Image 1 (tube, helix red, strand yellow):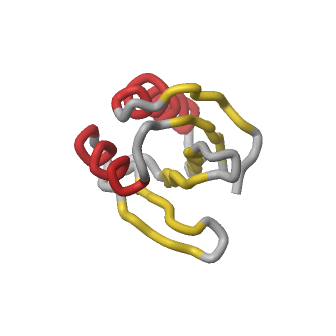
Image 2: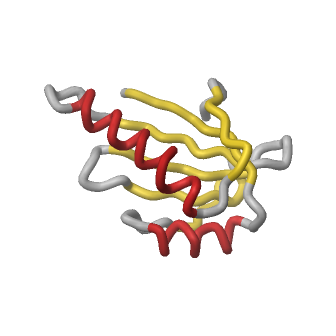
Length: 106
């Protein structure tokens, strides 16, 4: 499994962020809640075998975790495309700023 995470700031709450993420596409985001994260958003990154999760962190910002589960011969290229889509399209499109890679994963 391949994983990465991005810490970022955004001028909106999770509910409004979900609407922005859905508008950007291509994934459908779902509001969830857990004892560990509290409220969070998640999406399956079809057709890639990946899961994305956005949640609030203690510092007051947000974090996007990306988990990619493929190990076939095209996995390297699909992983590269997915990370580029997240960094170059998804996060800028929803108004994310102060985006930084982080080693903190859940």
